[in-house]
View 1 (cartoon, helix red, strand yellow):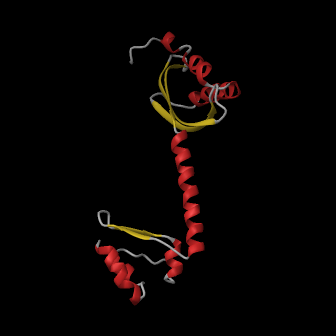
View 2 (view 1 turned 180 degrees about the vertical axis):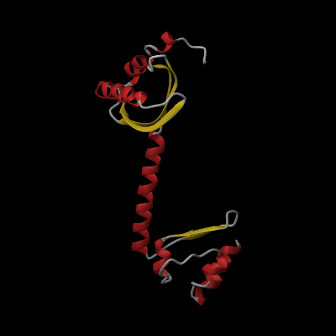
View 3 (view 1 turned 60 degrees about the vertical axis):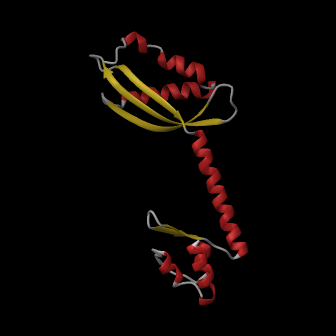
Length: 168
């Protein structure tokens, strides 16, 4: 028991949706949440991703909704519900920016005949771009596990320069 009475929850959904949701999404969200609640067992949670328009805003916002049915009454109707909406809009927008930048980098590699390879000494993991495969004519599912293996693919005239970079 969280210390709330049934009447304390009676209008929570109305208050939330009336205060922040755009009229276009208000009814859809209310219907959606009612159908979700009817499919959740007591003491279980449902996590979903939502795209909602917020009142006064022209763009949509993205949320992760955590909906938990805490208690039902004797007839099986929800008595205590916990709903948490986390705004993930900035995170998703950041991911889109990263994706866009990666596409630009790939295009730049193609145009400049360039590539990158990096090795993390702490995690012992390496990663490289498609440009490296083209430059050094690496084919197939080759795994370059460490800097020494990477040097095997480098032409002799470039190895001294690469070793200097690695040592710095």
